[in-house]
Amino acid sequence: MAKETQLQVEAIKNGTVIDHIPANVGFKVLKLFKMHKTNQRVTVGLNLPSSALGAKDLIKIENIFISEEQASQLALYAPQATVNQIENYEVVKKLNLALPEQINAVFKCPNSNCISHGEPVDSSFKVITKKEDIQLKCKYCEKVFSREIVTESN
Ligand code: CTP
Ligand code: ZN
Image 1 (tube, rainbow, N blue to C red):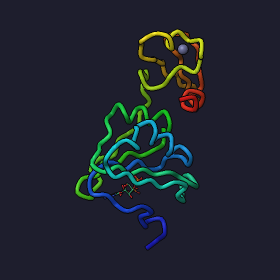
Image 2 (cartoon, protein in one colour; image 1 turned 30 degrees about the vertical axis):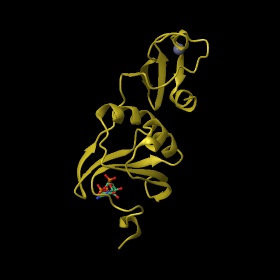
Image 3 (tube, rainbow, N blue to C red; image 1 turned 45 degrees about the vertical axis):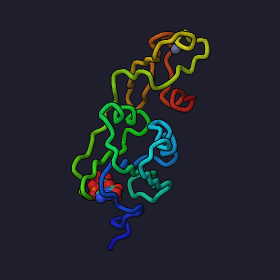
């Protein structure tokens, strides 16, 4: 069996496999989906060898299927990740990650003076894409931040 075809983390029966996460982003994805708070079995592979990425992170969550909304949040962290739905050991669906037009109530605004911090309102950003770059514009202070600034400061 070629090395690439061997499973690096045990196969699961039912649930979600998020594959091809860039190395070092896996932790953030775990935190984003609060996977440490689930009762289900979560297996994580960090810095696994990958022919496409060099190194990758991989997350398997048993008995949980991520929603389209969660998939669009994931797109912000790892646009090239693959989300596989597993049923009875078979891959039954691969979700395409698409960037959302807006992202609400997920990230705090990095601008400490932003009015959204003092108000009981949900944060809201418009997603702006310029070629490879992804930027987020806060609905409240109208400042524009790179995707990295927003995800790092949360
Ligand atoms: N997987 C798993 N448990 C299963 C079936 C698959 O954990 N019962 C994992 C595989 O290890 C892989 C991912 O789910 O990480 C996708 O499986 P598959 O589509 O068979 O692999 P690839 O063809 O390599 O997928 P792709 O090239 O689309 O990433
Ligand atoms: Zn703001």
